[in-house]
Image (cartoon, rainbow, N blue to C red; front, side):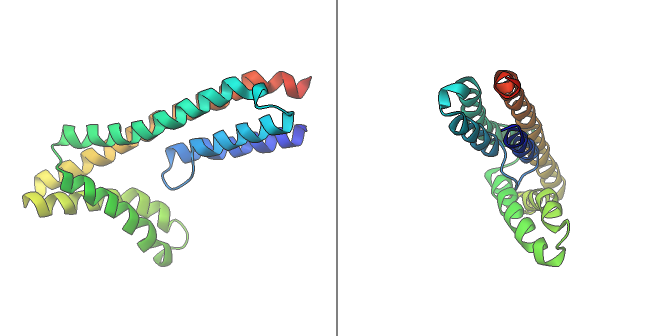
Length: 171
Protein backbone atom coordinates (compact mmCIF):
# COMPACT_ATOMS: atom_id res chain seq x y z
CA UNK A 1 0.00 0.00 0.00
CA UNK A 2 2.85 2.35 0.84
CA UNK A 3 4.50 1.75 -2.54
CA UNK A 4 1.26 2.53 -4.39
CA UNK A 5 0.88 5.73 -2.37
CA UNK A 6 4.35 6.93 -3.39
CA UNK A 7 3.76 5.92 -7.01
CA UNK A 8 0.61 8.02 -7.01
CA UNK A 9 2.49 10.93 -5.40
CA UNK A 10 5.11 10.58 -8.16
CA UNK A 11 2.29 10.70 -10.73
CA UNK A 12 1.07 13.87 -9.03
CA UNK A 13 4.55 15.40 -9.29
CA UNK A 14 4.42 14.73 -13.05
CA UNK A 15 1.04 16.46 -12.95
CA UNK A 16 2.57 19.49 -11.22
CA UNK A 17 5.25 19.63 -13.92
CA UNK A 18 2.55 19.26 -16.55
CA UNK A 19 0.60 22.16 -15.13
CA UNK A 20 3.62 24.38 -15.77
CA UNK A 21 4.98 22.85 -19.00
CA UNK A 22 2.51 22.82 -21.88
CA UNK A 23 2.05 19.51 -23.65
CA UNK A 24 2.17 17.35 -20.52
CA UNK A 25 -1.08 16.50 -18.73
CA UNK A 26 -1.25 18.52 -15.53
CA UNK A 27 -4.06 18.77 -13.05
CA UNK A 28 -5.90 15.89 -14.69
CA UNK A 29 -3.07 13.53 -13.67
CA UNK A 30 -3.36 14.73 -10.10
CA UNK A 31 -7.11 14.15 -10.21
CA UNK A 32 -6.66 10.62 -11.59
CA UNK A 33 -4.12 9.78 -8.86
CA UNK A 34 -6.53 11.00 -6.17
CA UNK A 35 -9.36 8.93 -7.61
CA UNK A 36 -7.15 5.84 -7.77
CA UNK A 37 -6.18 6.28 -4.11
CA UNK A 38 -9.84 6.68 -3.14
CA UNK A 39 -10.82 3.52 -5.03
CA UNK A 40 -7.96 1.56 -3.46
CA UNK A 41 -9.07 2.78 -0.02
CA UNK A 42 -12.55 1.46 -0.77
CA UNK A 43 -14.37 4.79 -0.92
CA UNK A 44 -13.95 8.12 -2.64
CA UNK A 45 -15.19 9.56 0.64
CA UNK A 46 -11.70 9.00 2.05
CA UNK A 47 -10.38 11.55 -0.44
CA UNK A 48 -13.39 13.87 -0.65
CA UNK A 49 -11.50 17.05 0.31
CA UNK A 50 -8.55 16.59 -2.08
CA UNK A 51 -10.97 15.38 -4.77
CA UNK A 52 -13.06 18.55 -4.53
CA UNK A 53 -9.90 20.69 -4.44
CA UNK A 54 -8.51 18.89 -7.54
CA UNK A 55 -11.77 19.35 -9.48
CA UNK A 56 -11.92 23.06 -8.58
CA UNK A 57 -8.25 23.51 -9.55
CA UNK A 58 -8.84 21.67 -12.84
CA UNK A 59 -11.72 24.01 -13.68
CA UNK A 60 -9.72 27.05 -12.57
CA UNK A 61 -6.79 25.93 -14.72
CA UNK A 62 -8.91 26.04 -17.85
CA UNK A 63 -10.09 29.53 -16.98
CA UNK A 64 -6.59 30.67 -16.05
CA UNK A 65 -5.27 29.50 -19.43
CA UNK A 66 -7.74 31.66 -21.29
CA UNK A 67 -7.60 34.65 -18.95
CA UNK A 68 -3.81 34.81 -18.72
CA UNK A 69 -3.34 34.57 -22.48
CA UNK A 70 -6.11 37.12 -23.02
CA UNK A 71 -4.58 39.44 -20.41
CA UNK A 72 -1.14 39.18 -22.01
CA UNK A 73 -2.58 39.79 -25.46
CA UNK A 74 -4.71 42.70 -24.26
CA UNK A 75 -1.83 44.36 -22.39
CA UNK A 76 0.33 44.11 -25.51
CA UNK A 77 -2.40 45.30 -27.87
CA UNK A 78 -2.68 42.00 -29.75
CA UNK A 79 -5.56 41.23 -32.04
CA UNK A 80 -7.35 37.93 -32.60
CA UNK A 81 -4.85 37.31 -35.40
CA UNK A 82 -2.02 37.24 -32.89
CA UNK A 83 -3.93 34.89 -30.61
CA UNK A 84 -4.79 32.53 -33.48
CA UNK A 85 -1.18 32.71 -34.65
CA UNK A 86 -0.01 31.68 -31.17
CA UNK A 87 -2.26 28.61 -31.20
CA UNK A 88 -1.21 27.62 -34.72
CA UNK A 89 2.42 28.26 -33.77
CA UNK A 90 2.09 25.96 -30.77
CA UNK A 91 0.74 23.09 -32.88
CA UNK A 92 3.23 23.59 -35.70
CA UNK A 93 6.08 24.07 -33.22
CA UNK A 94 5.37 20.84 -31.38
CA UNK A 95 4.64 18.69 -34.43
CA UNK A 96 7.06 20.38 -36.79
CA UNK A 97 10.12 20.19 -34.55
CA UNK A 98 9.43 16.64 -33.37
CA UNK A 99 11.01 14.90 -36.37
CA UNK A 100 13.70 17.56 -36.82
CA UNK A 101 14.87 17.54 -33.21
CA UNK A 102 13.71 14.30 -31.54
CA UNK A 103 15.28 15.32 -28.22
CA UNK A 104 14.06 18.69 -27.03
CA UNK A 105 12.32 19.49 -30.32
CA UNK A 106 8.76 19.46 -29.01
CA UNK A 107 9.75 21.42 -25.90
CA UNK A 108 11.52 23.98 -28.05
CA UNK A 109 8.44 24.08 -30.28
CA UNK A 110 6.22 24.68 -27.25
CA UNK A 111 8.36 27.66 -26.29
CA UNK A 112 9.09 29.17 -29.70
CA UNK A 113 5.98 28.16 -31.67
CA UNK A 114 3.46 30.42 -29.91
CA UNK A 115 5.87 33.36 -29.93
CA UNK A 116 6.65 33.10 -33.63
CA UNK A 117 3.04 32.26 -34.50
CA UNK A 118 1.73 35.27 -32.60
CA UNK A 119 4.28 37.55 -34.23
CA UNK A 120 3.46 36.23 -37.71
CA UNK A 121 -0.30 36.41 -37.14
CA UNK A 122 -0.11 39.93 -35.79
CA UNK A 123 2.24 41.04 -38.57
CA UNK A 124 -0.14 39.68 -41.22
CA UNK A 125 -2.94 41.69 -39.59
CA UNK A 126 -1.18 44.99 -38.81
CA UNK A 127 1.84 45.00 -41.16
CA UNK A 128 3.90 46.56 -38.37
CA UNK A 129 6.81 44.47 -37.11
CA UNK A 130 7.26 46.45 -33.89
CA UNK A 131 3.61 45.97 -32.89
CA UNK A 132 3.76 42.32 -33.95
CA UNK A 133 6.82 41.67 -31.77
CA UNK A 134 5.18 43.39 -28.82
CA UNK A 135 1.96 41.39 -29.25
CA UNK A 136 3.86 38.11 -29.58
CA UNK A 137 5.84 38.72 -26.42
CA UNK A 138 2.68 39.82 -24.57
CA UNK A 139 0.82 36.63 -25.47
CA UNK A 140 3.74 34.44 -24.41
CA UNK A 141 4.28 36.35 -21.14
CA UNK A 142 0.59 36.06 -20.30
CA UNK A 143 0.66 32.35 -21.03
CA UNK A 144 3.77 31.85 -18.87
CA UNK A 145 2.18 33.72 -15.97
CA UNK A 146 -0.89 31.52 -16.32
CA UNK A 147 1.28 28.40 -16.26
CA UNK A 148 3.03 29.56 -13.09
CA UNK A 149 -0.31 30.19 -11.38
CA UNK A 150 -1.48 26.73 -12.44
CA UNK A 151 1.73 25.26 -11.04
CA UNK A 152 1.12 26.88 -7.66
CA UNK A 153 -2.46 25.59 -7.62
CA UNK A 154 -1.27 22.08 -8.56
CA UNK A 155 1.31 22.10 -5.75
CA UNK A 156 -1.42 23.20 -3.33
CA UNK A 157 -3.64 20.33 -4.51
CA UNK A 158 -0.88 17.79 -3.91
CA UNK A 159 -0.27 19.36 -0.50
CA UNK A 160 -3.95 18.97 0.41
CA UNK A 161 -3.82 15.34 -0.71
CA UNK A 162 -0.72 14.61 1.36
CA UNK A 163 -2.09 16.41 4.41
CA UNK A 164 -5.46 14.63 4.32
CA UNK A 165 -4.24 11.13 3.43
CA UNK A 166 -0.94 10.79 5.26
CA UNK A 167 -2.67 9.33 8.33
CA UNK A 168 -4.17 6.58 6.11
CA UNK A 169 -0.67 5.55 5.06
CA UNK A 170 1.17 5.65 8.37
CA UNK A 171 -1.84 4.33 10.20
